[in-house]
Structure formats: structure tokens, C-alpha cells
Image (cartoon, rainbow, N blue to C red; front, side, top):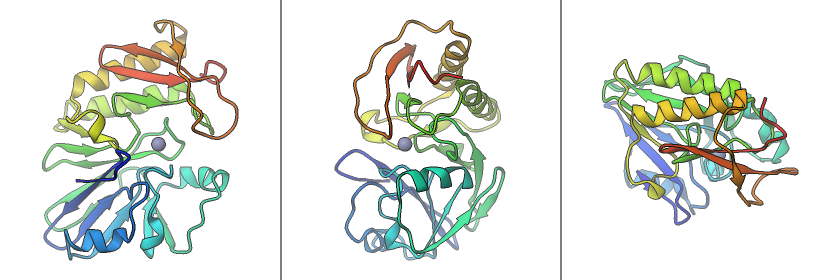
Amino acid sequence: MVETSDNTTMYIIEGSKKAMLIDTGTKCEKLDEVIKQITQKPLLVMVTHIHPDHSGNIKYFDQIYMHPGDTVLMRMMKVEYNGKINYVKDGEKFDLGGTPLEVLFTPGHTPGSIVLLDRATGNCYTGDAFGSGLVWMQLQPHVSMGIYAESCRKMEVLMDKGITKIYCGHYPYVKKAFDKNYMTEMRQLAEELSKGTAPEGKPYPTKVGIGTQNPMITTKGSASIVYDPDHIN
Ligand SMILES: [Zn+2]
């Protein structure tokens, strides 16, 4: 685990042949050299989504892997990247040598959000797909709450089939892996927001993001969702 000073988290998974860097943090001078101090194995660089606190240092790598769903976001944020972009798809597997990592497509926080499943250890690395205690759904381009609830449901099902620990993209805020209970509460809250039956939201002032926003926050148990009441479904 590598953390930046502003509480973003990158994960390095090492197999016997290759290693994968999951997310590239906000600002980190010469991140490629930092990673080489940790692993010398050939490195795959995977971004869970293209927000700048998860893909901030891609310029240090000559190729990255991402889901094509976030290319729209790349254009909106005018991300400049001269390296090669490899697009991943749902279910795609990456064998690092005894450690297969599998892509799960989980749109919601962004249109192209993915998580990485490690079925051998039961770990899952989720970026912001399921939040770090709270998930931001107010940002543009909006994904409907119903689609997000479906992403939560897919994850919930996997948590009955061997995935036990969720490692989020802002680990210092929570300092623990999330369990299935969190996933269930997140899915229920997304469904309730979609149907208009969620607990009443409170204003959540933030200026981060593109375009106009009217962010509100609502909570169920350990899960909170920040949403824009004008863009729920
Ligand atoms: Zn994000």
C-alpha cells in the first residue's frame, strides 16, 4: 500500500512473474522510481477510474489499463496522456504469476469505474467505486442510482462467494477493509435513493467536480451516498 499526503491510496500486488499497480495517486514525484524501490518485476499500471486523485501520475508510465467508460471523463477533464491506453473489459483476468486479478465493471461513481478481485486472498481493490465510507455520486457525468445499485449488488453476490475484504481508494480515512455488511447497506441505500424512499438528505457543501452541483448526503448504517437530487435516475 502506498499513500499520498492527501490520503489517496495505491495498491501494489506482486505475483511470481509480474506486479500490478492499482491507481497512481494524486501528486507523487517520479512515482515510477518509488514503485521500483518496492518491486522490480514488470509492472502493469491499472487505474480504477480516471479522477485525478487516482490517475494523477500516469505520465510516469508508458502504458496504462483502464475501462473505456471513462474516456468521456478524460475528455471532460482534458487529461493529457501520451502513453498507450489499454482498455479492459468486465471479467478480464490478469495473471501476475500465481496471483490472478480479475476486472469487475462497477459503474456508478464514474461511468467506467472498475474494481480488481483477487479470489486467492479474498481481497478486492475498489478505488472509489464503493466509496471510502461514503461514495460520491453527484459528479458529472452522472450515472443513474439504479445502475449503481446494480454494481453494488454484483459486489454483494461476490461477497458470498469468497471475496471478503474491500480495500478502498482512500484507506487513511477508514483504516480498515470493508465487509459484506457495508456492501449490503450501500446497495440498499442506492435502491432507496432510486425509489425515493431513502432517509432525507442533508446539504453536503463541496466545490470539487465539473459543472453545477447541488450535493446532498444521506446515510444508512456504515454507508453514505453523496448525490445530486436533480440527477438521481
Ligand atoms: Zn473518484
